Amino acid sequence: MEKSVRSALALLVVGALVSALALAHHSLAMYDFARLVSIRGTVKTFQWTNPHVVLRVDVPEKAGEPAVTWSLELTNPADLARSGWTPQAFAPGNEVIVQFNPLRNGNHGGALVKATQVKTGAVFATDLRGR
Image (tube, rainbow, N blue to C red; front, top):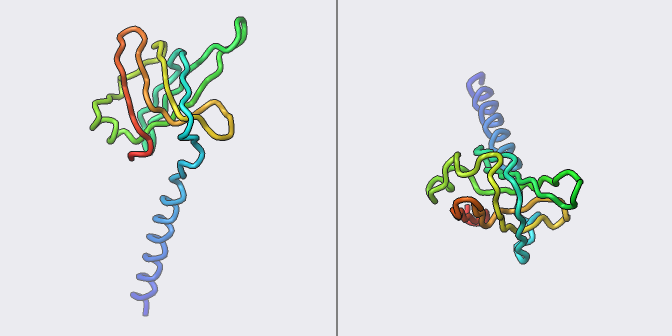
């Protein structure tokens, strides 16, 4: 009897962990894939982390006012690495032009489609839906 209780408890723990992982990954419904927005700004951060890489870009909106930070989501580091990306693709201070599918709620963010380094002309493309 003790063995069956331990087995049931182990199954319960595994089930809870799998459920938590599934809930942690969000849907792509938050992005408007019918729209493509382009902005030019300065890289604030480039976070090479799971489950998604994030590029944050500071964009000046009005003269004399602080820049607005846009948060752009990419796919995971493994997929990006297979496409030639590296954790050093973007450094703080790099000037970039980014194209992305914006958030449906109008917040400053979206799913990155393409980023171009202004200084070098290097182009990095991705598709969050192709994960």
